[in-house]
Length: 400
Image (tube, rainbow, N blue to C red; front, side):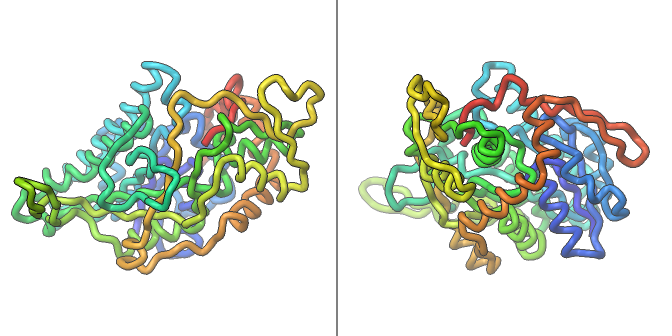
């Protein structure tokens, strides 16, 4: 089997590539990545001599390239995306970039897949689209969680683009099948997951930025008062989740009952619902508690300072101004995924953090150039490939 992984040089993609090649010795992977700031060939350096891995530098919006690559793939795992909320808030140009990559790129890939014909003719049988819990907006500080019945409610440009991309992925099942044969020629499924922690994550995100700041003797920066809650899943658990969807997940969708209130009575009408798989861990924590946990695990004192208070430079946590749009809480009910696929998380948050902290301690040569904004040049397959590692003038605040 050959899998096409878009965004395969990024955080999640490169971890998946390592996982799949290690656990499926007969399979092959093609990575398609444009190598923008967060795509990093260094993530795949130890696999460069592996003949089962092919790397292609390219844009998912390139239809002809997409068509060529999907024509050689049994599975498409679509991870390529602009993913960072703060970057999406930088202005109209940033919003356009998120929309073009996340929505137009997804649409172009699927158009390329179905251009090869129906399921009996084309090679690609599953298109797995990676989405996020942020498409559902925010949760209150209670016991509620996002589930398959939660309506889309994105609250900033990043999550809006991912919500539209998710809809686009599902919509191609209609284009292929029509309403009478939905199960006969379906193509896509969507994965939604919580915040992810692990190795190879670009150091603009909260955990790698905090860990590397501590290693550099700098404070951890936390938005607002740090009360916002996130659920964290370890990258290894997510890779096993992708494996479960690839091997046993359903694509397409089905008509399910949708309950409405009409004339004072509850009625059920049939509504088509695309197949989705939700991945979480149940490991929720506030941003402040997460910062304190990282300091404790790295044997550092906990001293908190508000803006302007740390005149002697002794504080290990700096509170900074909140972002314009900062969702209160995310949490996912992944019970349906467990029932259908038998998947459940194995790692607790502190286990995930310990593995992550240890990795960043061992690999300063990986993250220092990225934080310094150095241009990186690689030799890959006899070709010279360059990319920006730009965090220069960026990444100074908390990112979560």
